Length: 246
Figure 1 (cartoon, rainbow, N blue to C red):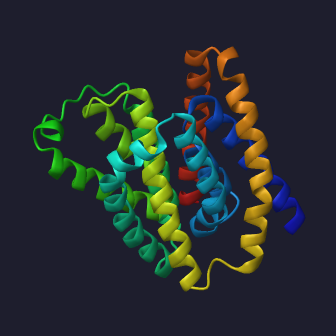
Figure 2: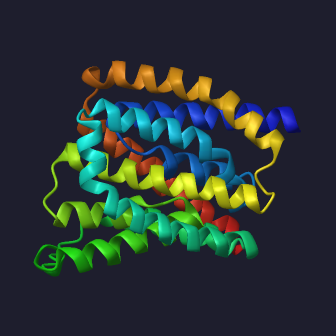
């Protein structure tokens, strides 16, 4: 059973990394719910911690101006990290299946963003307040479900960020969030040596898939590809809802 789980885990990590490499984001949003279908939310997040670090770093570097991006978005990332720390502590002491439902809802919100006509003017009229509210909210959601994207996408789009800035801001926030999660899970003796070893083994899968994803990016029909991914995410969210309600 353990070997079968690791094979499925490696396959999920490969698919999520391939998608992330080809469009610049999506790894935790795809990997976490798929793993959560086989296990609990805490375990799903733990197995994506170290692979996510590699994915985040490569994504930030691939957009260029790495240190400038860190300098620009570090305050947002620190706020998100604080929120992630709080969300992670809640998850550690209350590892409930309700967080799978929360993840499903977060995915559905993410998928509905293109269809919702919204204009949150105070995001750019009150930049410091909006940075705190959305950064902290994204961190809490990430700590509980590994899904930071729904909150950050709203914030970055309304802040008029470019595509490159959206990718860098999201990945930097995730990078800071994953670092604090690794620390907290380790202190709680939940992130075991065996899981650390398995996670590092998955880095080979991540590196290969990211490389292939970046290579095939220019050959893809981006619009159709994103629609397929959205359908996949919608189906996964429905499966999580069904599994949680049974």
